[in-house]
Length: 212
Image 1 (cartoon, rainbow, N blue to C red):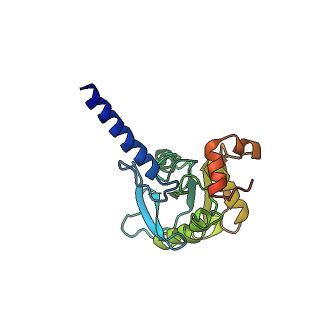
Image 2 (cartoon, one colour):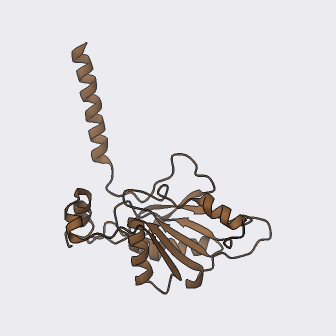
Image 3 (cartoon, rainbow, N blue to C red):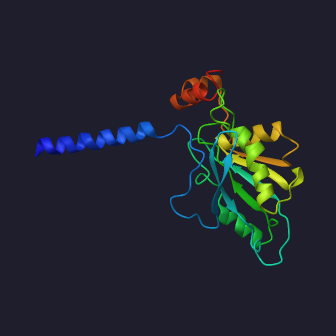
């Protein structure tokens, strides 16, 4: 019985380790395990990465009402490190409540995917193209699919932690695309800070080719 229990334990441990090893360093398509209130999960095919990329969508009250042809401003939300488009979110319920109370105008809220570890940058070897897919693929896809105000004045970007870093980076790099930016607890790291953290060292190597 003891040997059987030991075998079962080791077998389960081996299965867990194997699954951990197979977990991708970055995943750009992450549907929520359960439906998210007020949100829809969708995707598009990325030509840059030749893979499916996910995003979550909040549409304002009345968007799908018959006869509604209004166009809406869009906020793009960037998640933090190790997260996805389906978690680490600014609450859609807060956005919805603010619209319904006339605190803010009706708008579309997009939860983008940064792959989890990209810092919203293209990797040095072209394997992960987080910046390219967001700027050149996601934004045009959203403008073509939904009734957006498809101009700088109708588009904003925000993010948390790694997403705060990405939001500031992209807003400053593409000022013609975004009229405003908000970074919540932006994930800015010194060279020493990166070297002191194992996960950051792996990101530095695999995304940025080891360059500090």
